[in-house]
Image (cartoon, rainbow, N blue to C red):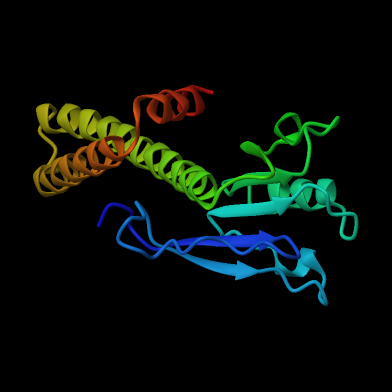
Length: 188
């Protein structure tokens, strides 16, 4: 499986209907949860979401407050803001990962969602790859010192190869521009 699990999207938008992300044409599988505007949005925020799709035109609750709350409570969640016009207070400057201005096609929305989720998965895979590379180097040093860490070393090397393959598979799903964006995000 390209991504380790089905991605979870949280939509804070009163009317948006997302395109089906479970089709054969989709690069990722995702479940979508619509915000319940009869309950506090703050009570609905948790770290299990991979992507927040936020209506930047919301007044109640205030979209800026929703974005800030997500950044505080779920800092690894990607945030896609949707606006009717280019806003004076840019959501990207405030912490959103992407801004799309309506009208937009289902294809543009779907490809942006997929790109954001793939970039997040690539960053996670590369973090794991670097962590395992560091652990392998430490274990090699311990092996040379005569410590009995051979089993752990073999396990880490196996996980390292799996991590490299997962990162390569995700990379193959990204276009050149998407990969450039993922690298910029990774290096930040």
